Amino acid sequence: MFGILKNKFTTFISSLTKKKEDEKEVKEEKQIEKKEEICAVMTETEKISEAQTETKRAEVTETKETKEAKEETGKEKGIKIDLSLISKIKGIFTSNIKLTESDLKPAIEELRMNLIDSDVAYETSGKICEKIFERLKDKEINKNEIDKFVNREIKNALLEILNKNELNMKFMEWAKTKTKPIKLVFFGINGTGKTTTIAKFGKFLLNKNKSVVFAAGDTFRAGAIEQISVHGERLGIKVIKPEKRGTDAAAIIYDTVEYAKAHYIDFVFADTAGRMQTNKDLMNEMKKVVKVMKPDLKVFVADALTGNDAVEQAREFNEAVGIDAVIIAKMDTAKGGCALSIAHTIQKPIIFMGIGQSYEDIREFDAKWFVDEMVG
Ligand SMILES: Nc1nc2c(ncn2[C@@H]2O[C@H](COP(=O)(O)OP(=O)(O)OP(=O)(O)O)[C@@H](O)[C@H]2O)c(=O)[nH]1
Ligand SMILES: [Mg+2]
Image (spheres, rainbow, N blue to C red):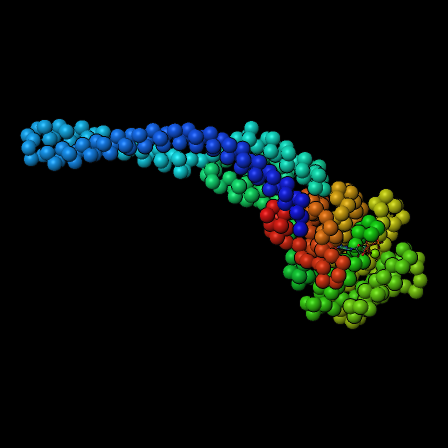
């Protein structure tokens, strides 16, 4: 998943590593010259040592003074060479590299453009790059660990964006703190995946031995009541629906909440019509639904494929009714940037992701998993 974004981050990491590798090569060439020098001196030392052995052999025939004089010369030379050898060799193996502003600026700029290309909103790309830059600037890193270090800091920067404002809300934990029936309403633009998400999410809860009832609150689009009824039948979930299209959505949703109370059902999921944020009537209908239902969670369903548009829509829905959480559908078909942008823009938790068209294709959003998938 997210192959394209992963490539962009990998390119960024390797461009920095490569730059430092080149510098390292020049440095190492110099170090090789130094090594050669050292070797030459070492050969010299060996010669001295051989000479010392020779001297020892000849010791018996020499006077005491001559012997001491010769040993002193060899020792002095030997000690001097040993010290410089250790510090030079140590330098070759442990030298650190500093990521300077001039190393980072061009690579970060390229990354920013690549993020924008991968559906990360302009503002969000800027923020991510700013965070990465601050984390890397002037850091001294062991030259063999540049890629590991940069990779870790990118992940930390992304996690900072995703984890802000308790964005990592765990749905089941949250549900434990609520009284039954727990009421969720799903909003979004036309075709983003609301009804399919409701069906998958309902199945997710059935698997956890919870009971669910659906409200066919999309009384606007032809075929919408039928669509959610089919899901309900397939899953064995009761659907409260109107006799005909055009009935007041808020009234149907109200009836569903009453049904749930009477039957001790754990969750009420209200489907609603897809609406453009520019459609005044439908935006007002949404406000009425909220007033009547008093949901515990207003969920915005975003279509990952719509990229930057989804961000603007999330912002407008949030302004209209105050979104509590986001589900990103169709993540299987998109680059993933949308999740980062929405989280950054409206600062609300992403709770689930849709990753396909079957009932099982939903998973709880986990920021760490997401970042690992994205950066590698
Ligand atoms: N690949 C993929 N397709 C999805 C996913 N979620 C929904 N879809 C598809 O998206 C299309 C629209 O889904 P719906 O659930 O009808 O969307 P909606 O928001 O209820 O649409 P309206 O009621 O018209 O506003 C359908 O063909 C779904 O199968 C997903 O996670 N991945
Ligand atoms: Mg629908």
